[in-house]
Image 1 (cartoon, helix red, strand yellow):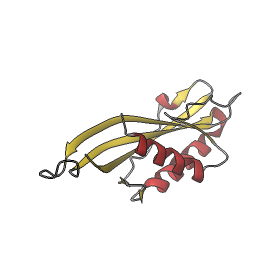
Image 2 (image 1 turned 90 degrees about the horizontal axis):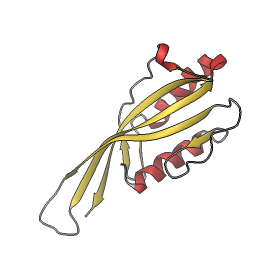
Image 3 (image 1 turned 90 degrees about the vertical axis):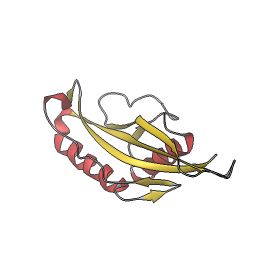
Image 4 (image 1 turned 45 degrees about the vertical axis):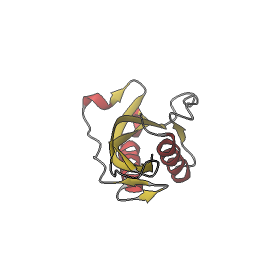
Length: 135
């Protein structure tokens, strides 16, 4: 699981960039919009931690390396909007540093039959990151 500081930073950046979209995240796991309105779902499926420095107890650097995913949900009829929003999410995080989070090159969303999820087309953008903290 990602650290709270990472979750807060990622979800705040998304909320600032997409003020008209519902962001469903770990800390703000509010209800998804009614009907078939689009929304962004944020997940943190992979985090690996390692100690980056030694010899200074309480001030050693630890690094979390992981991936967070933003799943863009758009109504089925809005397939192009799903692709465009997935591109915008990737652009938002690509090569960015914010609140101690360093993001690298997001993986592009793939499109095939698995994107069809009931009322929605879902495009997932995976963003690799690292986050350093003292321990």
